[in-house]
Image 1 (spheres, one colour):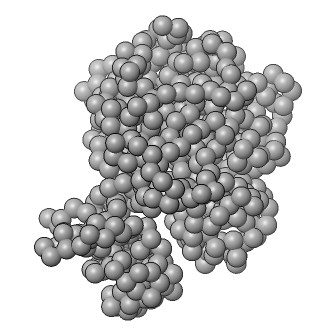
Image 2 (tube, one colour):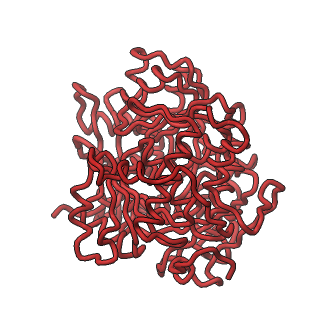
Length: 535
């Protein structure tokens, strides 16, 4: 076992080797040394190479250079190591909004050789307790503004006594006060490339969260592939977006990718469509990462903001409807990059950019990865046939002590739980989550296809389609619809509209109107809640 970890909890809780995915490092840029620290590569390197005065992070009344961010991260690393007993391999829970301090804390954990367990800001105490217990968290860094739930979760965990520090506290006992008493240098931990540095918990769209374990090498895989082959950033770019840093989509888009090239990032603590557009306008942001629902919500607001600086938009987290893509392109001239990633895979592995984009398709497999469409027996299905998406490459699923590992990984391939079709040109077309394919009276119906038809109606803001039990047909298509402000339309009108857009047998036989759809904090739709029978 080659590791710099003194606390070997992570090593002991990796899945059995025979349940790992088949990891492949086929590209020259993926040949890594045995010892690698992603924090050093993404932060210290820029200062060492003379780029310390470049702007790194921008927040409310905050504008830190790379040198200033490094100084903050070093001081926090000293607080962890000297004041909180954190050693290489310790798990450090991070709890905060997207902010410069949250980024500094993440880098401090990397540099100390510890493991970041970032959590969504809106999690409640009972949810935090599950994560603390499962990851056996050794220390916590938290924004004082959301301290209440953590304060309720910590009692009963003797290992955390005296090992919780809060920033934004406003006194010398807070994290900033402790940082002032520390030196701004730090001896970085010489971690192995295969030391775990992140335990990211899934967002709970299908039930209980799973901890996914990622190595320093995995972080650098994302840094070396996605910027080069998809986003193509330059040092003068300014990134922005709405996904929380606890969501690997946000960690990549707002930390890994900008810091790979020495660019800057604008961090929005409580991002709404208006706040995101204002940040793009005020900071002249050039690259945006957010979810499909946010792009659609921004459409009616675009005329109020100057976003001409924007050149790249990336969407992930759930399927990007073609109608949203086309409306945003018409309004801005920007071709949104739609990608599929997974917390288990760390980030995007299928997407296309520029003229390679086909609206409605997710895209092609990124260099370094392979994908197949398979049946229940892991046999390839012909192009044009719906099947399960299987993928492998330089990253892959490693659950923290979870029996579901053998469900996600089969014969060395990661099964993402998505139903896809591949066409003859190698483009992958999303159909549904595998458990969202609706079989009604013998017909296979894609829920997202029905959703896209509904979204074409002028009165519909958003919608979700699921299977509902039916004695005669087994299941039927049921739609949950949120109307635009002031819009009025009845169920029959929407049903007739869908029949005119797609094959009539696919129309929603039941429609229920809601004020809002259930979503996770990262913006993913929780269809399983819609499938639950009413209490």
